[in-house]
Length: 99
Image (cartoon, rainbow, N blue to C red; front, top):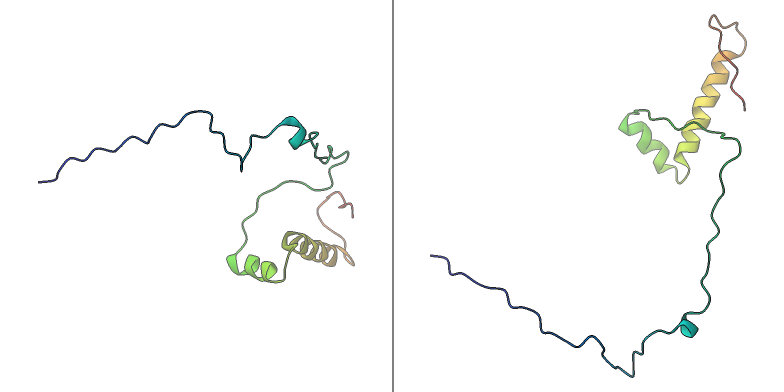
C-alpha cells in the first residue's frame, strides 16, 4: 500500500529584504535606456520565400561546407539554370531571371 505524502509549502519571507551586498537597482544605476537599431523594411525584395524538399545527403553536403549553405544551394541551382538555358532555344516561354 502506498503512503500518501503531502508537499510542504515554502517558507514565507518578507517582501522587502535589506541586503547591503545586493542593493535594489535605481534608475541612476541603470542609466538611460539603450535602443537597439533594427533593420528597416526591404525596399525591393530580392529573394522569394519558398519551401522545397531536398534529400538529406544533399543538405548534409552543403552544410558540411560551412555557413551559408542556402546561398550555395541557390548559386548551384542558378549555375544549372544558366548552363541549361544558354546555347539553345527554349521551347517554353519564361521570363529571364534577374541576376
